[in-house]
Image (cartoon, rainbow, N blue to C red; front, side, top):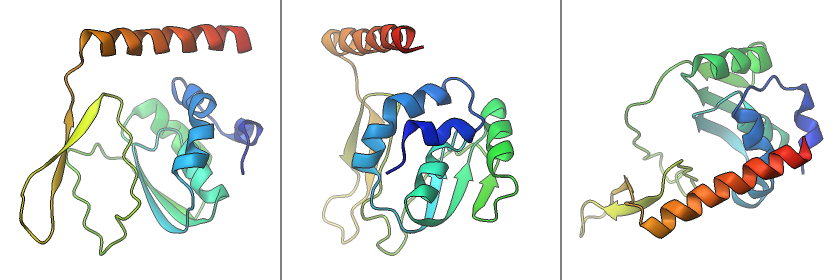
Length: 156
């Protein structure tokens, strides 16, 4: 298992550097096992590409459009033949890859839910929708953000 110190050689800019600090333990729980070819949409600076390569991926195809993150992505992997970088903003995603979608992980930065689009078909389709926040949810999200900010201030 990779550790936070393994990321010191990567060029990372905010907020992607904090994603590694905050999310690495959950990546070990939710993104493993890894094998074969991986698609990383919203690849940031390559922090998850690094994770995938450290844990068995043969190659990673990274989609990213944020200029500062893309600059880091090229600095980190521009010469690595295992990584393909596609500087593109994704407008819509369809995932039907002959069973490889089994175990797919979707990360959102908003509260979400899945809604089934077509009941009774042999290949069900689902859409990810933004869930409306209750007042309690909004306060919880703010409290988590504040707690993490305090944590970052203590550990830096």
